[in-house]
Image (cartoon, rainbow, N blue to C red; front, side):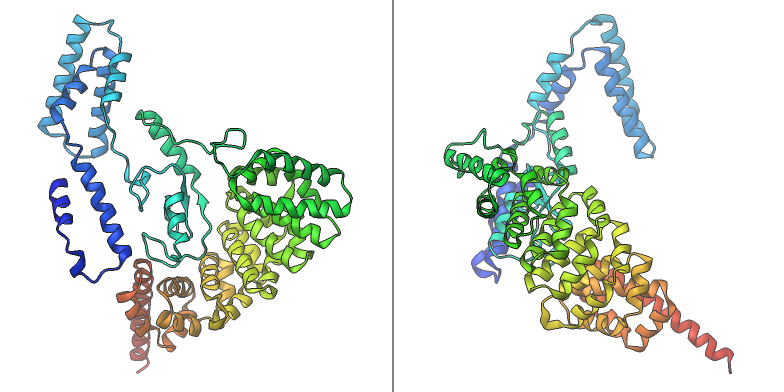
Length: 507
């Protein structure tokens, strides 16, 4: 099958097909994978020989028997003659080993098998772009996971969509997938595959690294000024650390290891606005490094960052919002940030900020609202009216963000109630008719939440001609949008049947 597919891919006449360079690159990448697979022919007989060669002790055979037994149980079907024959064979082998070789050592045989096998990488462990085993898996805003270097290259090329789903990305932040990374590490260890290499620090740096000895010396001198300098020296030092932390990853590690984070957190309460801006922005840049996130939170930064968000200059407030978004990537921080009172201040920035500040506020609110308790906080803080204003202002550039937040709030009963009071049906149907695929999907999700929980909202949707728009969405939308549209259409049909029945009974 591999050879057949590889041959078919070899004969694709690219020059005669009207396909983009991007699609062609994807096809060629898949073709390269099949070429490599074809070059690794399987040797089933040799594999069987090696498998049998390690069945030398009672322990080996017991493990194999247990595995076979579990296979039969999990299948839930009649095991059939073949399975019974295998079980009988294992019993005979077990009896033979018990008689002939009860003391045999198993370790060398197991090591030999491990060395021989070339384990098949689970699909979930492969990057959808490179199809290789992921070393640093990260999650994009659509929920898909990619190898960091691959998706970063995609984003750096100017793409604004998810490569796998083609949905528009709400933002370009990359969230480390710690769970998957741990599973990959366990799989590598179990299968004798070399573990992904960890990120180096400033103490163990490759030659040619961008952070030099001069940088480390400069960092130490800057920290001395932060700790003991006058106000002007502190302002200048915080500004330089801000730039150094922005410059490269090695600097971010070095600055944190030198002890800068607690000193910068102290400066968040500084009365000098410029020093405060430098401090919060330096922390934002440092938080790009995953391990620094924990150090920042452990230094007690969250309440001080929230205070900057409430009372700082506009630049400081916007960078504080971005910092909170970065820290909220870690789930437990979502709870702490919400409890510290960040959400009302973020809503205020959403209303007052620059275009960049509004987006920083929106992404932070979206991420925080993944936690159920923060949904309620956002609704009670009055998030829905400003979101509806942003949704109705098509030229404001915030429609995507507003809909994404409304969709996540609509899963909470207080959120549905607040959205329902904001006369949302007309604008939601307009988005379903004319919006982007991602926005049509989110608008349908909000409408579905409203209509499944409130008969009056369903009637309003019917009166505004929802049926035609939803029929079109059920044919042309994303898979999720089609499901939501289909569900609402069923509700509309049931409503029509009830109304007809009432009309007949009144005659």
